[in-house]
Length: 213
Image (cartoon, rainbow, N blue to C red; front, side, top):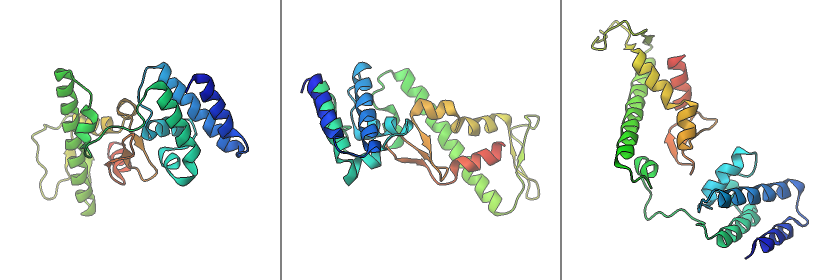
């Protein structure tokens, strides 16, 4: 299908539809065109839906449901014309680490990302510990860095977070980290991947924000 035919197909899909649906169709068409211009072969619903939702258009779930038939038809037609992939290849459901490392051949970069993932996992463990402490009505004291890291809290003494530990918690939900990995925060304070997979569960972001102030 030539580009002229794609434009004609778009206009045919827009005939007689609600103005909001027409606006969504034109937005999806523009996003597909941008994917082609940047040389990306990714025309999956997950990716197009994420980019669309960021600009106020239909999300991936909306595109996948019954009312999103025209959206899917447009994406499929554009992907076929551009020689792109309509689905992300997956033999089995990858782990979070595998999903993030997919396509990264540089061993140094892979090592650095693995270290970051390890830091995030450590942060998650610290958060779970903090929740346990909160459930026992203990008081969490945030250190200014003057306390030695080897300090251990006694039964009647609140735990202490060092400046480095507070920074690690804040970095886990920073805009830079979220933008870099394509993660989002939903209304339940969960962290989601661009494919909608839950990376950190309900209350994760709000809990960290309370801890680091």
